Amino acid sequence: SQTIHQWPATLVQPVGSPLSLECTVEGTSNPNLYWYRQAAGRGLQLLFYSVGIGQISSEVPQNLSASRPQDRQFILSSKKLLLSDSGFYLCAWSVQAYEQYFGPGTRLTVT
Amino acid sequence: GEDVEQSLFLSVREGDSSVINCTYTDSSSTYLYWYKQEPGAGLQLLTYIFSNMDMKQDQRLTVLLNKKDKHLSLRIADTQTGDSAIYFCAVGGATNKLIFGTGTLLAVQP
Image 1 (cartoon, chains in turn orange, blue):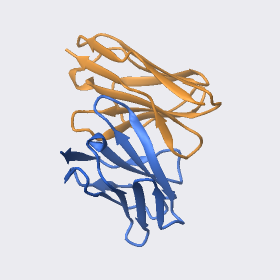
Image 2: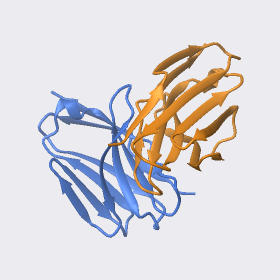
Image 3: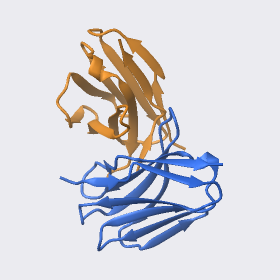
């Protein structure tokens, strides 16, 4: 069966510090991978998605970036965090254009 | 672009039925989903319906699709306190992306 992992589960970082969030998927090959942010207002904002290794589509211009160094690994990064980067970050995977399965999320607080 | 709308809040009494509604704009949406999010957790896929279906029932959950009005609903029978959560509607089809609604917070009163 497929599983999706995210770490860390929670993170508190000062403004201006770097960020690296990791997401890995097990039990499937060549999945589509997604990064979402959910702010306090609870809507989901799609940040990045990837249909293959090294293929990243950015949905929202910002100081975040994403990389996919391996088939089942998706990384969200920032060189310098802003206060507005605080939120709940969710990774998801799907097969082609079908339903997405979400990880447990990372709660990021930028202080 | 595609828009998916939901009411923000629904309150019901334990044992009653809950109906959560969703409207969408893209008539080419092929797959329609309902997700549940409990506090501090990721989204859990509850059920889905294809656009060539009008209804799907899965235990206490019933999904109704009115394709003409682009209206999707989720009915939860015999609502329990454990059903309290945020429910997201999502639609997809032509691209690799799903479009999510803003979520409906369901509060179940004992």
